[in-house]
Image 1 (spheres, helix red, strand yellow):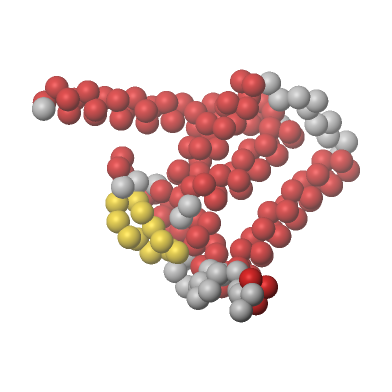
Image 2 (cartoon, rainbow, N blue to C red; image 1 turned 180 degrees about the horizontal axis):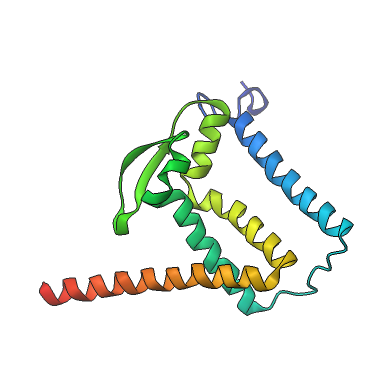
Length: 163
């Protein structure tokens, strides 16, 4: 058998059709945003200052973690995932369930790395159309990220002092 005769991933249960649907949805959303922005005469920024990139990146990180790992957002994931366990800092570990598009959505909603592309797309769209509001939302999410780091640092110093 030649390489041309073998499938992409022998015996895989990955819902590639569902992944294709999600990728198409993401791309269609980006195209729709661009078309609406152009129709409304929205002038996109010529450049994005490094500070805003850092703010958008930190906010994307936090929003992705909140969507994929927080207990309080489990109601969003529940139709597509099941609880596998608990992580640090009150985070939960979910895994996708079902098949096809349901499983693909579960894979997306249980993976902060996967979800970050969608979150970044939404935040960048907000930044392009309403930069002041987007910066405010990003600043709030960044503040939560800093607070999380401080909580971890505090608990680490407390554990070291007790040990």
